[in-house]
Image 1 (cartoon, rainbow over the protein chains, first blue to last red):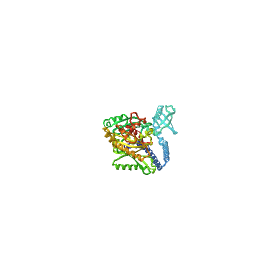
Image 2 (image 1 turned 135 degrees about the vertical axis):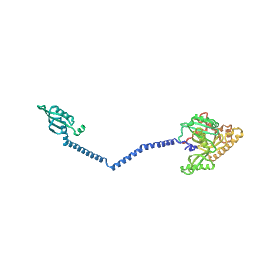
Image 3 (image 1 turned 90 degrees about the vertical axis):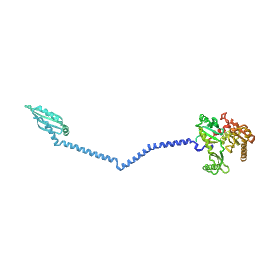
Image 4 (image 1 turned 180 degrees about the vertical axis):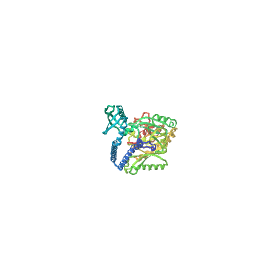
Length: 186
Length: 308
């Protein structure tokens, strides 16, 4: 039971409970957009995108197929690289290659120096010949060194004859890449 | 609505405004009390300054006033469904409004007991002219009071009576009491019995008319009051034969109009006392506080939103 109260409703202040309810409502309304747009919506969008990605993967095939394709292409590439290197070797062993080397040996000869024999085992060239004197022979050696086609030029044997003439055996090591060296010198 | 421990009771009388500021719990303790004369209320800014000084602005205020338009009725509610009771009370009040051609603000409460014969519930309804009610409310708000309730003065005094009857053996609770509120412009007579008020009547004469001081004026003031008292006592003793009615209690500023109480005592058959005679039964009120003047106000201090 209560005591009589003739204060009209419109004059009565809101109850504290009512105040709290209104405050809570305002708080909810202000927090809701933050929660919705800050957390819920991004999460929803993320899950949707995940689903879309999964369905796209299902349509385009598995990632392992792509990897297999990549491996096959890589294997083909290696095979082609092997073939190209084989072609390079073949080119180095070709008569044209040897002709170029002989040209270098001949072009480096000073006037009067002659070559009697040239032997080659793939990595070393042995040149035998004769020179009117040792000065010209030394010039021949310098020319060969300066040509840049050989990594090392070494005099193996010199035979002095009566008329200052000398016979010689030269060892030329490390035949460098003929094309590259030629390009550099040019 | 939550009601704080501190309360301000404001009795807006025609002669003056009475104010009591009190703490209600655990026991009632009067903090301040005072009278604001009518001239000051309408004249200088003293009341507002006083209100501010006493820090009344933030306190919940129970307002009470007295007006001839006040209607108090007991309405028998037919039917069992309590959900229909508000509608029934509204219909009854609407009938009053139509008959009296006046809009009312009203409130009611359901009395706990049922009719022994048919089990009907009774609603106690109080109504007052809407324009008058709002005029008083607006006036109080303009003065800076924070209103919580508008109390019905006759029930405010009944609370004080109940308190008094619990403490005073001379006033047994099984008796009925004639209540006489001798106001400045109006006089209220009613019979109180336990929690009920029987047939409250407002007589449009007040002690203002005694300000001339002549014997004719006294006669003109007393005759309508005594006639109403006699009629009321007769009606009550006829309809409630088993309930003793031996005591009348007068209060209000009219008690101090010279010779009024003694003249009344000569004319009525029951013993007449003024309320301040019982002030010793209220140790919680300050010694200077006159119960005849502050009776209504003290009753509003006891106003509860939810009574036990």
